[in-house]
Length: 396
Image (cartoon, rainbow, N blue to C red; front, top):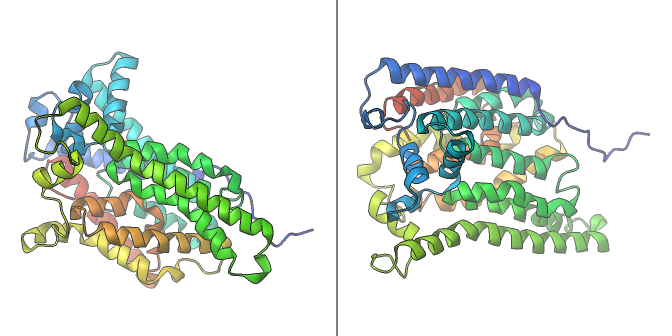
């Protein structure tokens, strides 16, 4: 007998998406390596100091931290996930720093491909017509260069995709609330990778929100459903608070123990101090006239996000429970993302949107007949970023 409420089982990996993502990752890697080899670099200090051609910008900080630790407060702007991976790669395999850099870059590319392939079955089930464009948008979009090097973004998007699969997949946390504590498995590494990993901690709140909203339907307002809503809300809130604050608290404790007293930030937040003093980050600091160039660089990601917020209902030809979950989850996410825009550096915000919010990109597939040209422009911008990034020129 057919059960109308039964959800189809989905494969763990979408092999079609994996193959496509792998080809696209190889494309971005080749473009970046060729650009680094054939085009003049704006800054060659990374090569002079013995780093690989793709170890630029933040990757230089990660490598320095992996070698020397957090010996200056400016380094506390970078969380220990990638530096730890670099150090472990050197120690476990007993290889030179340059080989460790190349190994971590390979692992980073594999993480991107794996993350996309894990979430793709959910995307294909919810919106089959845009599943393939979605893969292209994630891998070749504005975050393309950052998903191809030893940055936090590749590992962050893997953690994000695993968490989303656990939430939205058949038999996942929504259907089986007892699995909610397991969300810590992908969320904890995300917090270890970067400060805005705390954004993903909000995923733990979604099951409680969903089951509470369900109570608005009188037919579903059973004692069991009330208990489920209360349990998921309480446990989810606990996970969100602990995971969300863990990174900032541990960073502050470590910095205070290592560098205080004698620093101007002692008694306050080292992270806020470094962000303000070294990068000029503060409330609405990115929305000044002298930041017009950065705003233009971030514009594609901001436009994509605005599209996702404005037209979330056009991403599939028919409704499905999974699609309803996606729309509701994106709506909840957008509340937090809107607040972050006021306090984050605009370029970092654009990278956050483009590389760590894959469902925002999915809902932005509501481009209708303009899907192909807009996707082409979005991808072209990402590929341009690969060239700029590899030659040590500003991108986002």
